[in-house]
Amino acid sequence: PLKIVFTTILILTILAGILSMYKESKNKLLDRKEYKALSTAMDKAADDFTSNEDLKNYLTAWADENKLDYKVDDAGNIIFAKEASADKTNVNPVVIAVSYNYLTAKADALSLASAQEIAASNMDAGKYTVIFFNNEGAYGNGYKNISSSYFTDDTKLIYLDCGNSAYMSTRSFSYSPNSISIPCEMTPVSCDSAIKIRISGITSGELGSNSGSQPNPVTALGTLLNRMSTKSITYQLADVKVASAGNMYSMGLEATIFLNSYSVPVMTKYIDDRIESYNKTYKDDFPDIEYSYEVVEDLSTLPAYAYSKEASSALNSILYTVKNGSYKFDKNNVPTDHEVDETYAINSIQNIGYENGALNISIATTAYNNAYLKEVMNQNATAASFADANASAQTGTAVPVFTNGRSRLAKDLGFAYVKVNTISSRNIIIKEDTDKVFTPCSYLKQINDSMDIVHLKENEDCASVYTNTLLCFIKDQGNFLSL
Image (cartoon, rainbow, N blue to C red; front, side, top):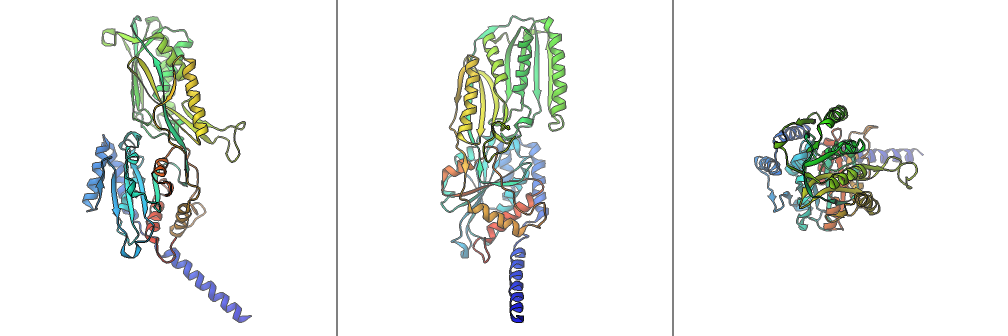
């Protein structure tokens, strides 16, 4: 019995030693001060970016300063490729990818800094590549046109971004752009007064589950049109200009509303109330937002023609009917394996403008699966038909759901995280979740369906730990006790 006890103790001691060696071997690859300095510098520099060219130049200047090898391809992608060490040529290649978009550079500072840290690392590791996708206006020009040579069958690809929550995902929404076209003639202005509406200072962002809390200036215009319609106020609409951010939330709007002078006091009182409500709702999260109006007495400074009554009425109907925000399951329609109030689709009006005899409304729709995507787009088409407008039409290629049900990479990253993390009840594991929005992973999966792809979302609490996890994961491939 004594021998058995001794043997058991010896085995446990050896196992404890191996575990200790495993836990402590490579858990401090990230210089946290350096990482913080990178993210802080990006946050500060973002205030001066006016184009993606500015952000690209910022990143390449940083690379030059640090004497890093990189290339910029024809699509504006910045690519840092590290060849495998001599003893690790058989290790599966790893790709770390982020998107760079000057309009969201401040919000993306943590994930951009993570990619910078990994690009600047000089590890004894298998082949690894860091790619900054050019994503100006969230059009995805970079990842839509990246060379397939970076994505072999055995590639392990981590797409990295950041937000309010932190998690790892192997599934994200499908996506389709669509539009509604309203036939519109221009008619002479017959009203004797005008109110010019302005909304500005909205920080744009990519389509996400926060759409319900994002101010939408097009919806604000729709509220005014609906008010005049329900109160039987005669009006003419003209010169609508949306500050479009591409395939992102709009940043502002200007519009001219012609009406008769006796209706001006009623409408300005209503607009004052709307401004107060707007500020109360959004000012804390969007401190630069400004909703204002001007009563214009000299109509000679304004357009002489307005949109036809029929077109303005159709626009009012569509903006009132089309849901702008998140679709969520309620207790009466929640499917198995889903939850009440879970987002299953998002519909976002991105732009509205007059061109070639029509008012065109641009909409972005994303959904949990193609069935929900089709359902929402059919609702958009129905809203158009009720307004005697042209049915909602798909304006680009629909992108399917991203899913990676066989992911070994997710398990390996979770294992690496446990290894490098200081364990606590709050952050003992990486949370796994399904993206409630479209991600570029759908496009990347189409490049090579054999790749193992994971989306990793950071937040302020865990960004440094996630970055260290990625560094350790890359370096540990092919080592003893490797993942």
